[in-house]
Length: 438
Image (cartoon, rainbow, N blue to C red):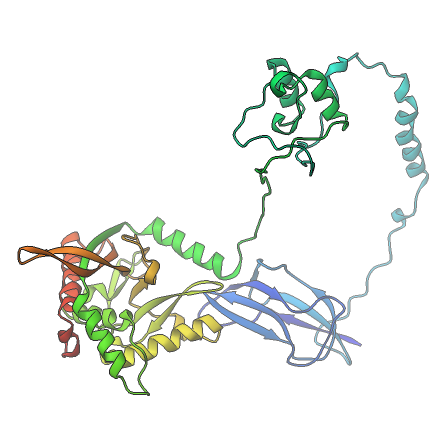
């Protein structure tokens, strides 16, 4: 028998470490060739590690959430033949594990204080103090009238002080005095467990749940923290009249061909962004602040924020400038579905030059989106709401939507940010221009 050691693979792109996000095997399991042993994550892409051999798992290195360097051993499998690693036999147990005479002396010494304890004098304590419980007694009885919510139990200051020192909430102690006043003997009976606690319709919940932040959620946290730390954000908000565009969108959906996708707002906004980027190309860019270089892209690779069960992903609609409304809608739907079912590729999650984020119908009035570094701009979409708008001497109902967009103030001046959003607004308010060449 031999041992085959599997190491953290090199996933390319200069990655030096990866995070273990899932173990599919345990020590003692028998695996076959190509069985998935673990899943690791690097930069929002999850990679499964299959077994190249058949055998028995003898060791696992690293816990879920641990960052492991490329080339480090992560799994050892006992296989037929020589394997690829030397078999290390466990050393014999050291003699120190056998109980020596010193240990017997220690045990006798440890028992000595127990025998001598009764002889040790303890200072007298007041009988009224009672033993303090380890935790507040908060288990109500199922019978007895409940104390009204918000009612402050009646008790003397001395009784309150004793209850506080003992970790007891008086709301659960039944009082036998006038008007339900809690007396000292009531507290004594409660501490001794001889009194039924008062029931209440309100029960405090002091549970604390700890969850280790790993995988995609940790990657999101790291990227957003870095973006807020490095980039001075400026957020610009303006409202857009979407009435005509919504009428056009509904008409197109009603008359679309069977092979055409259903149109949402996103492809229209992407098209408006493409037209605006023709005038303001430096907003489709990456800023390398360490090298002091701004890279402007002729292509508009629009990142599209997609909420998934595991967290937020940014899928990339590549070359949006070369797509029409229908093709933008089709690609956006394909990428969103792939992100949610976990089949999206690493290439489809990288390389965006500007990002579009939307919270859909729950988008609120205003948001302050965080820039997807190293990009310099992100366009945020809020919900559409019917509002009264004053036009031609009268108030009329209009469908209004806010655009909340953030920019890297090191690269984009406030004037340019406002002009960029105004360009998008004009395109959306005159939707026929979206079908014209930029």
